[in-house]
Length: 194
Image (cartoon, rainbow, N blue to C red; front, side, top):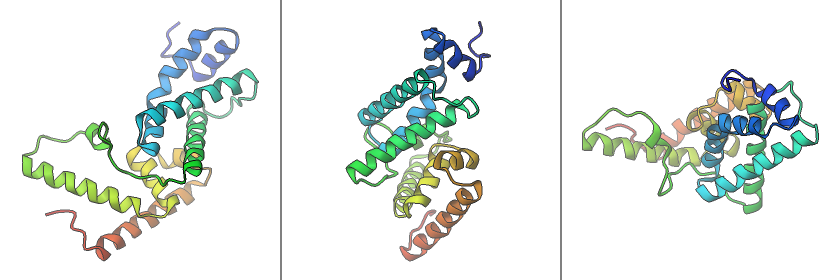
């Protein structure tokens, strides 16, 4: 069996028939995307690891109880579970999602950047820091769409499914986020380019 050609649905059915290896294949297929989404919300490797484990415990529990609906896509369902667990964490801790780097990980480190001279790189780093600060000032729903779109690289269709709103609502939140960022740039006299 070529694991690359087996669908998520078939892997789930194989797992439910007692094939533990199928769940491992399913986990390995999607773990990077799910973990990245969690990390972008919580900004802490240990916490992201804990929530990631919770996600897969919940998935296994739901599958074993026969409550998984095969009509939906597995990844979207798993992302929705991870999103809900992140939201639950923030509600419990009363913290806001911040778009900021930690000592060990910065989303911009994984973006392709041409070799620049030191001055250009410093300007880019300052610009990224300013943008992250502006995103953090947005209302929660707008901030969430910006994070999912630009930092987690999700499509508007995926964002709509994950946040349980229409695509038009997700697009509208992004539009208002951009309008608000422009206002914040003007109000704070932020210079993004030199």
